[in-house]
Image (tube, rainbow, N blue to C red; front, side, top):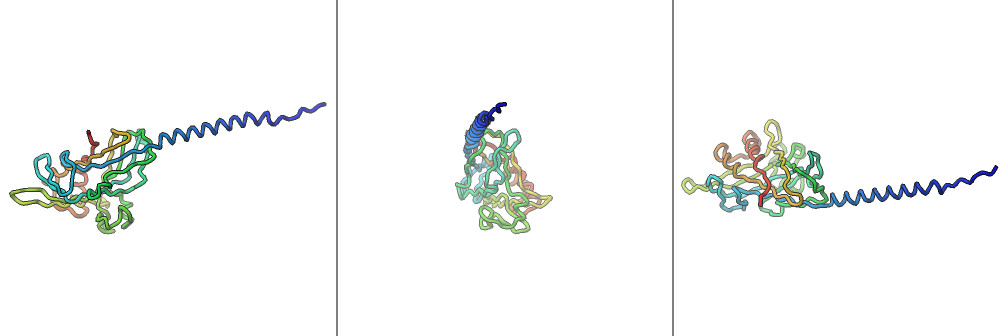
Length: 245
């Protein structure tokens, strides 16, 4: 009996072809994924009062014709995310960002390598309790930024100072240092907005309604956590909108 020689190459060739095809498919997958995720999105925050951009030490007018001047404005934006169908697509790698109107560069930033197919953004105005109990930190959380009270009170989420202009009674100074992370007076605000742009987002923070309420219903000086700080912080929740050309 003559034994047939086993042809190993006959079986290897189909495996090699299948392996090569798999490698090509994997390469194509990562290539197109990179194209999709390799986009950039520019984010800008624009603080305004009654449609006029806020410039420090410049006279502005509320919608009720009250004249006002802002001398200091700083606030924290944290955990900025892009979502699609309520699923997180991209998260900004800078978890806490201090916007300071004295530094115009802090009002905008670039999100790199993000999925451009998103329909909602989420972020927090202020800092969460974990950050507050971590003590004084570095970078934008450095106490020298003027946004840290003490280890007991934590960080100030938003600081806005200035005065209402009144020719008859004299200027009325206001100071709002809004923060607090302990219950029942937590002040962090969770913002959610339907997206109107894919590669550039201009987010307006309009203080007009905030001041219309604060000047009549609250003290002109709120400098510590508590009921007033919480109530004023909640007013800011509905002050965000997208910029309309």
